[in-house]
Figure (tube, rainbow, N blue to C red):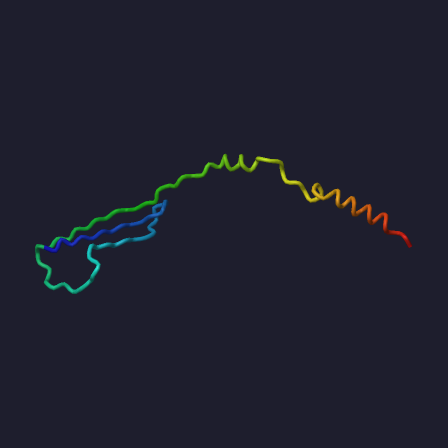
Length: 98
């Protein structure tokens, strides 16, 4: 008896659509059969459907809380107002000497 065993696996996505197909046999070398198949030969097939597991979802409340820590960033004028004031005073005092 041959006792040929094959396995067929259907891989589907989360919506049930077919993504991939696996076909496996225990024999890795393909060759010509040395004898003819007789009546006593049995073929066993296994089939299964593989679906993905739903992963862990992130906790978005922690992310929002982490963003709210600390003061809001300052604008350009809030950071550099003193330098602009000094530059304005320098221009006022040095110009008009004509």
